[in-house]
Each structure stands twice: as structure tokens, then as C-alpha cells.
Image 1 (cartoon, rainbow, N blue to C red):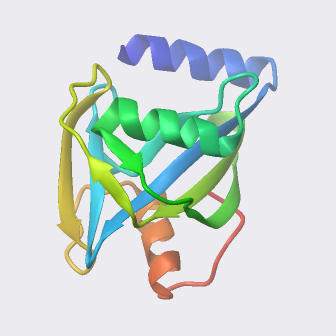
Image 2 (image 1 turned 60 degrees about the vertical axis):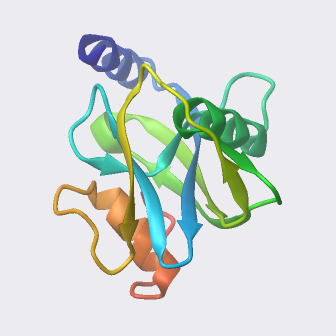
Length: 147
């Protein structure tokens, strides 16, 4: 799986393809749900790519259900719209805030672990972009448009 993602990133950077992603801050009181992927180190927000013909919200709903069994009970708000140039890619990411949902047990090939963390005690190996989004949500840093 890791090799696939490396090849994908090289392909996207060579051909300057734009991608769109949807990610979520899934919040329950003072906790956030984060995931570890099978192909990346560290903790991340939940989400993934927007498929052809999908809206950002449709992609988010699909990814939440597939990856962690979250089913939204109301429309999420949007935290921000970000541009990511990591590895010379041209990614755009919509980050949603999800507070009202139900959760089912699921198994995902992409997710090795999902865990709730207190917002004031995030894991040391959280991804930098995930930490920035949480800090923006909490008002600890100004909103940015850069991932």
C-alpha cells in the first residue's frame, strides 16, 4: 500500500494534476476522533479524495462511514478550504467540523487504528497539518488557506 501512494504522488506531481479532498474534525464534547493509516505514520483527521461526480460533502460522508463508521446526523460546518503543495502536488482540501453523528463498528483496509483524544492532550505523533487544523478550530492560531 505504501508503494502505491509513493507512485501516485510522483504521477500527480509529474503531470500537475489537481486533486480535491475532504477531511473532518469529528468532535464529541472535548474529544476529537483521529486515525492512523496503514500506509502513513502518525495521527490524522478522517477523510480522503473527492471522486469524479461527488461533492465535497458526499465524499466526506462516504469516507467517514468507510473509515470509522461515522454517520452524520446533521450537516457539518466548514472550517476552511486549503491548498496543499506538499511533494509538488496541487491538492485542495475542504475541512469540515462534525459534531452530531452516530458511530458504528467498521473494519477498514486503510485504517489501522481510530482513537478519541482530548483536545488538550493530542498525541505527540500527530501530523503537523492535523495539529494546525485543530489549533485553528480552537482559536489558538489564525485560519490559513495553506495546508
